Image (cartoon, rainbow, N blue to C red; front, side, top):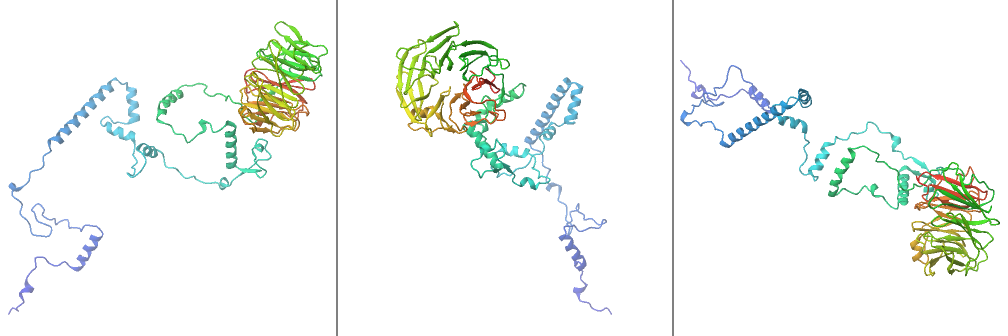
Amino acid sequence: MRSEVPRERLRFSSNPTMPPERKRRMKLDRRAGAKPKRKPGRRPDWKAGAGPGGPPQKAAPSSQRKPPARPSAAAAAIAVAAAEERRLRQRNRLTLEEDKPAVERCLEELVFGDVEDDEDELLRRLRGQRVQRHEDSGDSEVENEAKGNFPPQKKPVWVDEEDEDEEMVDMVNNRFRKDMMKNASESKLSKDNLKKRLKEEFQHAMGGVPAWAETNKRKSSSDDESEEDEDDLLQRTGNFVSTSTSLPRGILKMKNCQHANAERPTAARISSVQFHPGAQIVMVAGLDNAVSLFQVDGKTNPKIQSIYLERFPIFKACFSANGEEVLATSTHSKVLYVYDMLAGKLIPVHQVRGLKEKIVRSFEVSPDGSFLLINGIAGYLHLLSMKTKELIGSMKINGRVAASTFSSDSKKVYTSSGDGEVYVWDVNSRKCLNRFVDEGSLYGLSIATSRNGQYVACGSNCGVVNIYNQDSCLQETNPKPTKAIMNLVTGVTSLTFNPTTEILAIASEKMKEAVRLVHLPSCTVFSNFPVIKKKNISHVHTMDFSPRSGYFALGNEKGKALMYRLHHYSDF
């Protein structure tokens, strides 16, 4: 007899329960992202429409199926246009290839590769890989592209610790750096501080920062035209480097030449040395009663002529402004000798009507050649006509006249007095325009003005040379000197500017080797002159520069007219 089993237990389920071990494996596979493996023999019947977990579905009738999407007319037109463009490119390229030689086609294949069918591929290769940039960058597209073209900066392979240590530079034992010390505590400076000090000295010498040294200036849009000119300049060769026209400070390139009066040696003191304003001639005069002319060549300096004045030791001799006459005065006579170089005649001027001077010594000739100024006694200055040698008028200062000079335009006269004061006179009206005290001077000895009308130099008994600006001397009652030169310790008896106003020569006749050359506008002394070891200059009584500063000459008490060639200046 069959046992009765409940109906529920004999019923088979359509969705049987998965065993727990397999269920656990399926969960692990899902977490790991892997798909469950199927047996290769059993595949779901997708074509019959059966789902993965349900009963099979019937296929839809053919009337309900959707037809495949057809391409639109616009897409077809674009495709036709692109094909036509590729065909035209191919035809044009083939046309160009026919005219090219085989060597050129081979070279193009080696450089660009085989890109006959796709020119866009060639463009992509030439452009290279673009660097993506953030959209929120504030730089312009041009700046971003420029930044992207630079390779990334590499770190140094190794770093020397000694490079980071600050090296100190000795300032005391170097003759060039010693002048840059501001106080005694700056015996040593770091390299950075020395660089700043050199920059300050350069700016002071140049009068500011030059335009080519300014780094904060940016090119404006108008500079685009000049860039094309620069490109043209770089495409041709030539000598574009030239020496600077301004005289550098520090060391003056010069050499010793043969003495100017080597062909007429003398033991008497040289009282005057002057270069001819128009010819390559130098004049030497002294206490031996002679005025000699020499041709300047720097080697032998041959003698041209000598004029002997009997019992007439020459105190001063000078060329006229046009160079046609030589004027000479004596140490103990009131006669003024005039030598006409064109006619070869010596004309003595024994007496000037209205001039009551017993001795005529010191005098000055105006740069324009119109006037002759004679320094008299008791503070008088006498103005004469250069053409007729007649008295025009006189001027009077307090004290005695130490020295006087004309301005570069011959319209003013500067006079240094024995009381340490400087007087400025108007030549036409003979009135005093200004009067001031030379700073720190007890009594003056010499005075000079520059050819460009910028400076006035005053030499005093204490060895100080004050350099003033001419405008301040005319307008201020107590002008301050631009610079005080204190390289001499005895009275400054001679002052001379060179024609380009780049050198001021100062000298004292009271001490040997007491001569210095001062660079302008830096107002610093050239360190290589004079050469103290040689000691061949002795006591200097007179100095002069050639018309274009090519030569510098000075006369001493031993009867030698020393001459030097200044290499910075190419002409005589």
